[in-house]
Length: 329
Image 1 (cartoon, one colour):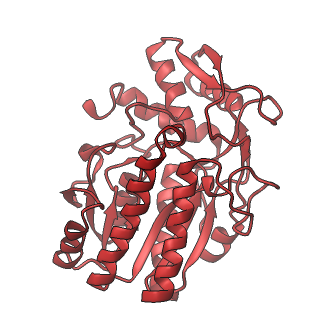
Image 2: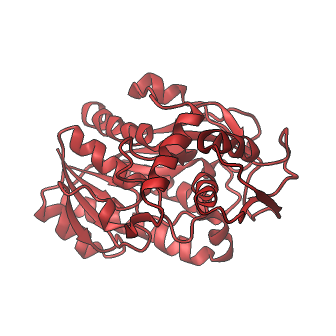
């Protein structure tokens, strides 16, 4: 199969590109490198620098490369920034999805796997979250992801473009050989920020909020290893090829860890006493998000291999140690 991966130079995208190649697929990557890194793209993949906002470019790639399916990662993803700059997120994320689907319809490409988010749920009424839980996003980032899912649903109805939306929770870790991992600028995610602080010894790590409705007052999240997450995208592609049925799946471990528990695990893994300060809440952050991924495990046959939190953090730590300045190395 020939697969186009939009945002394939990003954190999750680059790991999925690797899994697709290991699965025997031919991969084409489209990424504007605003947050991605060309160094993270497997050399066996063909790379195009550009944006999904350029419908003509996307159409040209789909037709020229004889693409069979698309995995769509290309979107802005910072919750706090989305609250401060909502129009930026609506333009890039929603318009990008519309442009991609227009190009796919014109090129007669009928298979799409979409990188969605647990942010579509908002503040949960009940945990763990299932695919039937109410969706009520509390930030523009989550709202754009939900809008993108709705656009996909109506596009399926009108044009027969079959799609799977994968709603995942917090992603962490790195490839097992530490060749690719998480490198954002600025870095806003918990695990890499803890580990970068451990590496630098600067004592600048901050936990945002200690007054949430959780056992220790800090956010609780469900963590998935990025390698397991990448595998789920490949399984979703196989499912669509065989069943031609649009679906939504949660991807998570069904076990939540608070920010302080993640810090404790990082101290254990690194052997470094990591000092921290307690800061104010970030806007748009729900108290707890924990997934029930029974549907994905049953229907897709998804079986996470690396769901121990210490192992997840250990793989991320190995990447930080071998790439102290990220991909600048």
